Image (cartoon, rainbow, N blue to C red; front, side, top):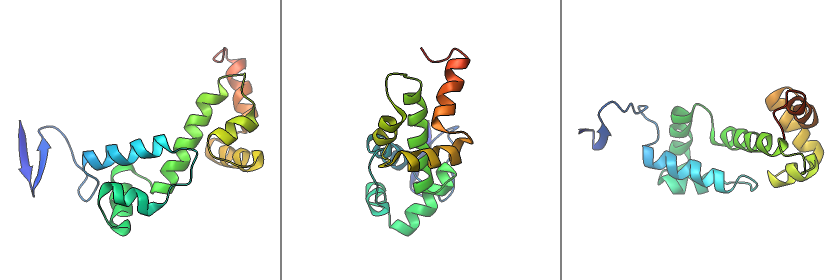
Length: 133
């Protein structure tokens, strides 16, 4: 059962962040980010997907996902890198390139800033706990 609130259909029990993205907008934008992790993504591209102005899109995105679009993209890149680091056959340099960093140093800096440890230390921690194959 659904109710209509200010022209938006809301499923009963589903909470919408007031001023945030509609569920379809959030799905479209997050799917696009996942498909383009290794590429720079222009704010206007994401805003166009959501059919909003860049200004309003930024505000709605942050309200829905708790962070600005650029930070979300960066966080998703680091999370994907963590998954790749669990695979010992790929080098840290290759993983950095696969998630969109042109230089190993920029990947290491971003990874360290996000996690508190370097990619190599993260990989070692996985193998020392028996998590990585």
